[in-house]
Image (cartoon, rainbow, N blue to C red; front, side):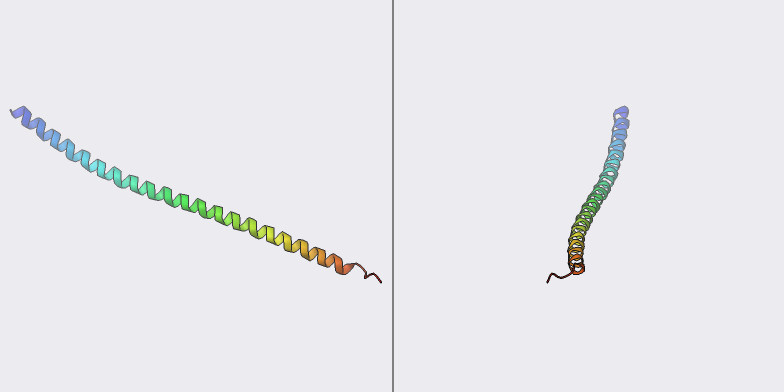
Length: 80
């Protein structure tokens, strides 16, 4: 009977230790998930900026081409 009591106390201690460790692991996992979600959001924002920069670059090329066309038109002598 005494051995059963000692074993039960050991099991109770192990269960409590396991519960604490499981709780700590759950908190750590939640932090990791939060970090991954933040990283994912940052990647999306980088992609948004990259797309915005491409769009601006295309617009600037169009404007530059138009200005070049207008400038060349002004340089050519008028036909009479």
